[in-house]
Length: 466
Image (cartoon, rainbow, N blue to C red; front, top):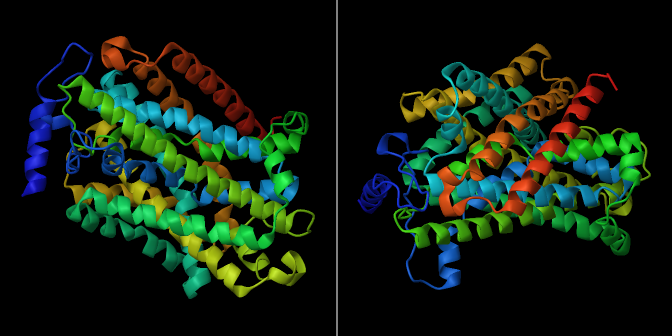
């Protein structure tokens, strides 16, 4: 009953119209993730820490996308090949992510609409369908690594055939439907718990691997070798491409609206923007630590060793092989790696399913039952992975080759999310007093241009044209 009242109040506030600050009415029929929009109460006139706790949660759902299984191979490979040199790339990627996600959250809170809805409203029907297809391909590409990671983790832990593991991962959409009935805070808590598992597993493995701390800290300082060494540059671009993903921008602009905010009160909106940004930055800092730990683990255990470490199974086996990692080799390390992989895959698939719904509702305004929407978005995402698994009879090496193609799709889709985001948040008519500051706007445009150029270069390298 309390939840229903909160949602009704949020819907009433959303229809009050513009206040002169540039905060626009959204209408009750166009709310993003309608069943949880404005469903979480936030205290008024509370202390800083109590208010922050109320706003903490959405950042964790966004952060898992920055430490999903797709990041693991590139980060560990970066450490095993170039030791600590690419830690500076992880740092730079994380700072870019913080800026973009803060902009996405501000867009959602101020306008009451997500990035997909606003993009669709400001394009023609044909362009809207085109953008939906591109973004849907990006969701599929993102899910490839998440589903593969979860499927392989289930095989390593329980011996399930890979196809069975993929089907189990597909069915987690049913868990998401149940959690939605229990409240959005339950989803946030579960994802945060899974993130904590990933963090502590790799923190433990890095501690016992005894990395060279002075060299590690030096790795956060950029070096010209990253640009001059072509193979190092390629891997650096892979780390950036795997970190900044388009679906997280759509997700962040939507779930930032789960808190009940009175948009007719500019101070309340400003408070929501402030605390949502703090939450986002804290959680993305955790993602930065996890990605750093992955690279440090690769450097401490695998730098200078011979052998193929390009697959999840290879990494799992290597952690238990004394010939590769020395005296610390243990089946426990391998098992913990698999547990963290499963946690990463499952948390990422939950947020990937939410992103799929946001994109489908925002771009094509699909009207169908929520369970059918989530099932459809999950089936669309899992179809290519399942098809490959059946065709190659569970051959992990062949199936993991999909990861390369998934990065190409993400690179293609990225500009279609970043350009509208920067444009909308810089629009005074849309954002009013919450328009991006000039330095933020220009920094975002420069980052967008550089990432587009680098991703085009990455695509050309992938297909062998440069």
